[in-house]
Picture 1 (cartoon, one colour):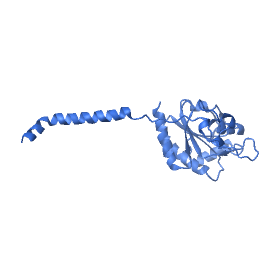
Picture 2 (cartoon, helix red, strand yellow; picture 1 turned 135 degrees about the vertical axis):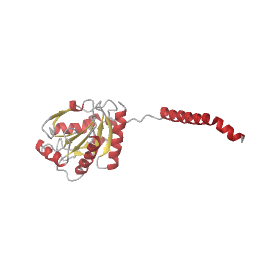
Picture 3 (cartoon, helix red, strand yellow; picture 1 turned 120 degrees about the vertical axis):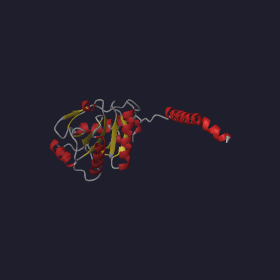
Picture 4 (tube, one colour; picture 1 turned 60 degrees about the horizontal axis):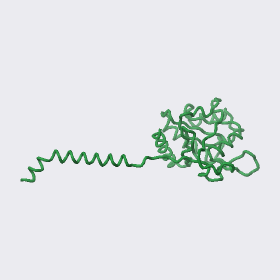
Length: 224
């Protein structure tokens, strides 16, 4: 009887203390939980076969160089288009029968997830600009349901595209067939932040890595 009366008398205090304790514990966990961050990639962190020899030693301060290309609508696209934006880039060509269709499908998946996000964009460089004219890119864009306002498919000078792949985005191999600016593009998607820095590489043929990419985009957005 005494215990019941005692419990009844102090029940409000016990409940209050329990709630307060739970709040303190959860607050302590939140404050001390490590903040998720993404690495900042430099050429020295990437496989040498994907990087031009003269920059393989660079360990920091790497940024995407300026460029000027034509997109599927004949519009000139430069880095100004991506000022203060996060974007995902890749290299492909419209007549590729192997990995490119899968990459394009997965980029389309990313497009669907970020289509209403004004901070996130997509960019695909053709590695066969002699084939991928503006007209060809437009045809391809229509076939793949590309949203023009979110995703630029671009073509331009082959030397410029080669240099971007090998010295900026760090995603292409030379093919050794004697062509000065020939390259073998990889399946990599590249996450670029608002400061033009590389924050992640993802296998564009792997659906699980697309979900990782989307999660990393959230982490990156939360860092601003």
